[in-house]
Picture 1 (tube, one colour):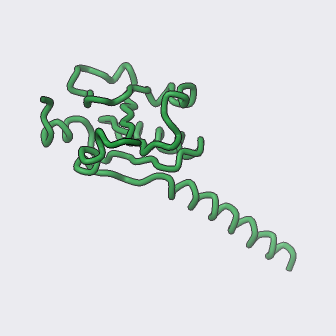
Picture 2 (spheres, one colour):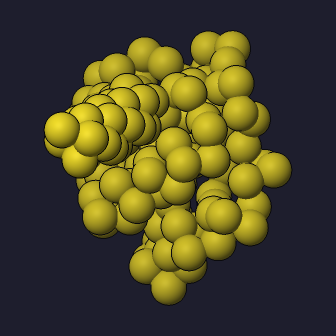
Picture 3 (cartoon, helix red, strand yellow):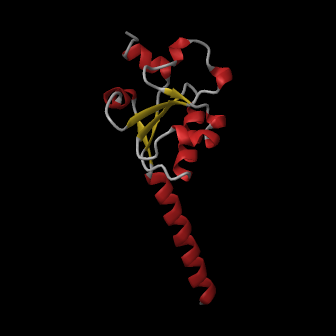
Length: 126
């Protein structure tokens, strides 16, 4: 009986941790990103690797560039209380960055589900 109870407690703890982490991460489309840009408390982070940046078309005005492979070392550049939108043309980088921020305690993390090309096709640079 003790083993069953211990197993139930371990499963409950793991589930609670997983739910807490995932509740900090949400998906956002390009329209939601566009509406959020320029609002107080919003930060856009370009998590492209330096080697993946091919041209200025991979930038959105007001973003900060913190490559996903340097994110853990540069967390101080991203305000912890901000709504943090993560964007890259490689969605795997966005997912990885979101998990890093959630693990570091960032409560408002948004994975932008489309990359720069989709954003630029709908919202051309001015």
